[in-house]
Image 1 (cartoon, one colour):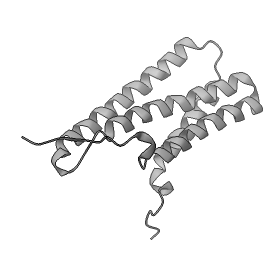
Image 2 (cartoon, one colour):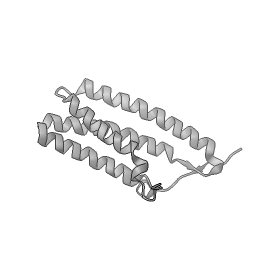
Image 3 (cartoon, helix red, strand yellow):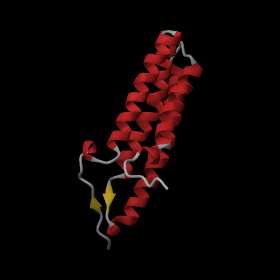
Image 4 (tube, rainbow, N blue to C red):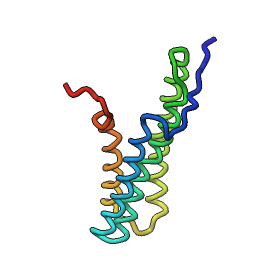
Length: 134
């Protein structure tokens, strides 16, 4: 029977933490930019879009880094899989919640905020220090 090693490293000490902070900063900047550019509705719409991308990424991060080590590979893969499925369901639920619950919404700003934060996650390998440059 394999032994599963739990990762007890706090989130702020993990290599992914700067990326999550960058996503949070882009979320806030998108909200502020939308507010200054098109007004408060665009501002909170862009902020909501960024949060729709950020919150599921936080959930995935929590699930993906729960285990470590060669003896925990099965638990690690299962945790990453469940984290990704949870991320997809959470994203859909947050979009549904925003569309159903927010009366005044700038849909373009919502998707711009979402895409900006999602783009940070998609380009994460390019942002990691020491990534091979060849």
